[in-house]
Length: 196
Length: 190
Image (cartoon, each protein chain N blue to C red):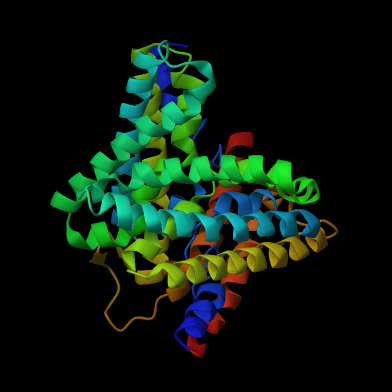
């Protein structure tokens, strides 16, 4: 695989959220608006890229038996960094909307999955590209999902309202049921596209 | 009274899976059969109550005195992973039948984000020790309830003609969406 392919495979062909079906919890929970989806995607991308780099560089020093614990420790370190940085500088509305799902990036299966399946077997540079690609793919999925829900449920996109204040929107889509249903139809469409 | 409202809120109103989106992976992964979901639910109730007990003690008697609360995420995930291992070893020695029933689900629980999520939320909500354990066990009961209802529906779904593109994961998600809609009806009871 060329370097470009290492990066692009995560975007659509192996999109972590829509094709590999990993990291369902944040995909459903924080996508009530496009901007929240974007913020969560970027936070995950940061953790994914840096943990991939670190794990690829220390893979030869970690004994095989404790490797999973080692990976989790590395991931948890970067998650703590993201949490503290966002607490300090991100707009409070976004930090509060993401809430408990920022520390929960630790148990996001995408990150441990890439560490185990890719970074522990490949070079540092390839792991960086893989992490970045998977992260951008995840961000893309969250952004699309957030946009659909925001348009249908709130009549706005990126907080810019395009229907009148009194207009009735399908409120269900910004609430929990809308998340499940939107993701169900999104995955079905991606499956269809993949076959075509 | 306070306890009753915590229990009802955690099981029905703020159902961990259908309203808070924690533990989606096991929810969709092991909800194919009612029998497996009962086993998984039992293991989750047990581990979650224990995890909240231990993380409460660790947070208040180790992290706070040392004022390293920012280490919460790292410590909690290690504590939970270790806890699951210990429970597995003890169960294997003390109660082989229980181990037979819960054993295969235990390793899966480490990756269940509901366990870590509820431990963090209990700290955030400033619950005391008893309250925190009650909160965790009733949340886990809510998880089990959602899992069993979902499994019952999916068993029936196997026999119906689902459109080809929606088979498998998509229809499961739409089903969960409708279930979640139904659970929203509980919102007014407290």
